[in-house]
Length: 476
Image 1 (cartoon, rainbow, N blue to C red):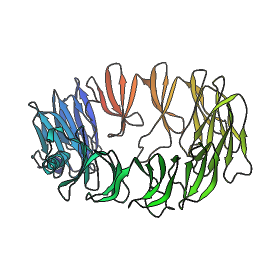
Image 2 (cartoon, rainbow, N blue to C red):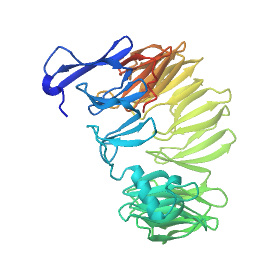
Image 3 (tube, rainbow, N blue to C red):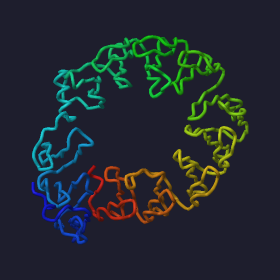
Image 4 (cartoon, one colour):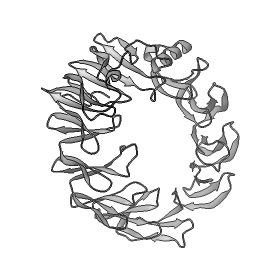
């Protein structure tokens, strides 16, 4: 197809303009300042461009234009259209439906295509291979060419390379090193198979959990296994590595795992099963820099033994009734009997005194917390410094890209039932004037609402799609 860019040069900057409620497209050729009319105002919606294409809507029909304004898929036939870029799937295509519900896959030149190994074709192949009703199969998930389907009764492991069903059962999950943990449909017992359906661990266990994923100190896959009411650890071949003598056990962290005996006391073992911390504690928590042993002293207090700490840290104040951990740093949220909250460190340092109505510690690198006091939200540092005064009725963190980078913390803020956006420097980049805001991850911009009309704006309040009465969230 001949592109208008050959007449104008490469189109760089484009903008959407509105005449009598209809949208059109303007663009600037490479190196030019002027904006040329690329398409007349004829669309109800022109969605933001993605990989050089924009989905457009005219009446009840959808189509596609390129950045030259040309309709590569005409907007006069399809009542549903979804673009699937190559980065998201096996190949680039448009999935469409006409008024009769007929489905079709199109390329960027409006030519019908067959999508190799699409979800639909995988489902058909799996149904044929397993002789099960295709219409009852629900695509579930996949990993490395192995697809898992469910039909409401069983789950099926289909190997696309072998073109056959290699397992039928329940509670199938993929773990490291091409291993699959699954439950036998009839005996209800768990075992381990590989991607070709070979049984590596017999189906004799009441429960199996992967215990060493991501732990570089564990040279082989270990699994927490339960059998006859006791737990231990086995490897992927079913060999017992740590005997079945415990009531409960946990995942390995830095070469250690917690275990609990029949009396409810907890200790630590290493990867060889040797007890390195006696089973005398009420609870054990793993933090990124510490292992914390917890003993209940009274109903309203607990004693914390922090690994490598110079001394034990004891919280025995009767007015503290709950301790909530922020695992990544060892911060502890304390709540008083009258409901006030604060933040301390495991080693006893008070970060924020317990005098606030609500506290939410934010991302690991910001050292800040969202705090509510007397119905208003603000932001404090973990040194109790005010970063943002308590002026908002609503304050919540969001994530989104800014020039390809993820910001630390951005915020949706609200006052008097109006909403806006505040950046990580606590400046309003979208004014607090909108009746509603929702982030669109696909287009990396916001759908904002004033009354019944919606628009799309970027992080700096530049309008990407002008205000329209159409539902901008109906197309995903």
